[in-house]
Amino acid sequence: FNIFSMFTWALYSTLLLILRIVWWSLLIGIIISWVAPMSSHPAILLIQQMSNQICKPFRIFLPPMGGLDFSPILAFLVLQFLLIALRNISLESGVPIVLSLGF
Image (tube, rainbow, N blue to C red; front, side, top):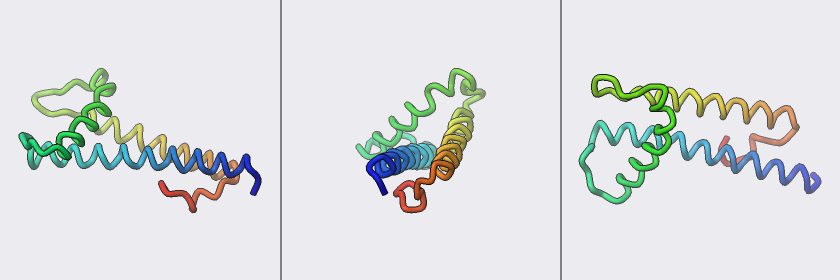
């Protein structure tokens, strides 16, 4: 390994880890909105704020309809596309992506 390949591996690992954290916070935020929508626990409020900020740009394209919010579906699709694209780019560049934390 040289310094450039180690830097790119660290960059890919960091991006994959961030995308995984966003994915899980979105999923947990959706589950919490069903189970405990009026909870005032600080951790639950943090996760709900994170998931709302993730879904905010997608609500422009899919506004809530009849009390149902379909913007997380579009957010999941975009996140999954980014994860797959990042994995493919890393595999093509020869970075050992299997050793990264976000894989």
